[in-house]
Image 1 (cartoon, rainbow, N blue to C red):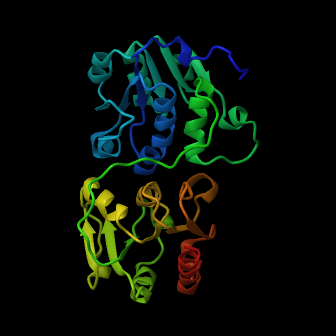
Image 2: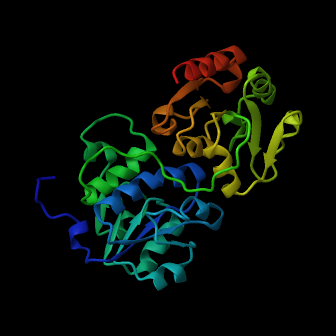
Length: 304
């Protein structure tokens, strides 16, 4: 964009309302926060709302960049009366929310389904960034802000807010679960890694209904609210886990992380803006031996 050229954001009046739609997926929600920070830094006057499912609203609550968190109801977006809506989701329900917003400026990625609803179609991130390479998810959403008028700058770390835990012995958070079996390293190997962490207490976390019985010898938190997970992660010395939402929470708090990837592409989903080691096995996580992960742990801790 030429210096001094008018932008989409220039069309917004002082104090205008902007709604950002990011309905679900813990990792996607966390990786939306750098884009929100860029927008708020450029236009601190804007009143920014995030439209998200209730189970993920805690990602955006207490954020200095977000004025209000809205549920994914047509009445909620209509009652907010945004001047601009930015759709980061792209599914059918998000299209209905865009339509219900009655916003004068409707922006979303041009390759998404229902892009005819947008009067500001956003190009591919590669076109915006001027680089033909695979882009990280955080870059993908931040590039939209650059297209809309935020000056190009370094994309910050994800931003989450939580309370501090009272002092306790140094510990490592381990997340052995995943959304699909193909993204999960065998539980017995996570347990072996935990036994090798002699100077850190292993703390295992899992979502509601997930089975952590394989780790009964260690401290476990099953189905804990995001507030608790945020606080645990914020005070951790190390994170070890599968490619998942908790890995992005760890990165948001700057926790050194070892993350295991199977079929997912680390270029898109690796820990963003924190020291990390990625262990990747596209042919299957079962092919990753314990020693390979332990070498990654030692390498990461030696680089501190």
